[in-house]
Length: 234
Image (cartoon, rainbow, N blue to C red; front, side):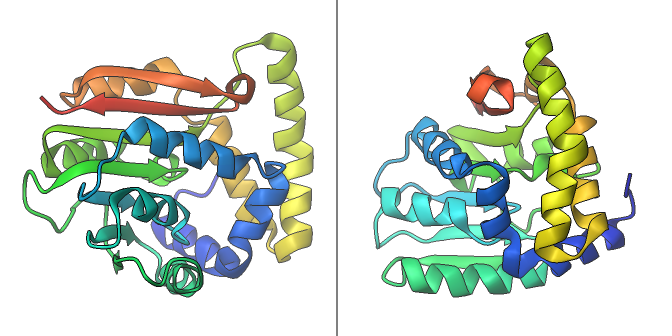
C-alpha cells in the first residue's frame, strides 16, 4: 500500500481530470446521493460558514453553497493543486453565481483561527490522511461551539455475505475499471487498499469521541459500503 505523501500527491494529480466521472461509474452514481445526504446531516442554515476539507473537485462545495446562499463564502481546502484546478473549473460551470474559495493546504495544520466555522465537512478524504487523530483535533479547533463535523467515508459492510461481495468488487472490479479509465494502475490499487484497511465505523466514532466531539454517531449507507459520521463541538 502506498504510504509516501508524495506518491499520494502524484496519484491524485494523475486522476484529477477523470476523478468525478470514474467515481460515478465505480459507485453506480450513488456517490452523489451520499453527498446530498451528508449535506442534509450538516443542517446548514443561510449564512452558515462552511469549510470542506479534502475538497478535491468541489462536489461537496457545490451542495453546500446552495444551502448557505449566494452571500456566504464556502471554503474548500485540498493538498493537491491539480484537483483544486479541476474544482474551480467545475464550480465555475455549475455555481458561478455563488461565493466559494479553494485553497491548497494541509488538514493537519489548518490555516484558520479557532472557532471559525459553523460546519466542517470531509468526504472520502479522511482515510487518505496519515494522522487521523491530529486531523480530527484540527477540525475540532476551527469549529465554533455548537458547530458540527460531518464526515462521509467509504467503509466495509458488516453483513458477511455482502462483505464478501464487496471484497471481490474492491479486489477485482475497482482496480480494473480504474485502470481502464486512467491507465494508472497504482491510483485505484491505492484507493482500494485505503478502503480495505480503513478503521471500522465504531473505531471512527471512538476517534470522534476522543477528539472531544459530543453527540457522535454514524449513518450506514447502501448496506454499509459508506457511512456518514457526525459530531458536535460543545
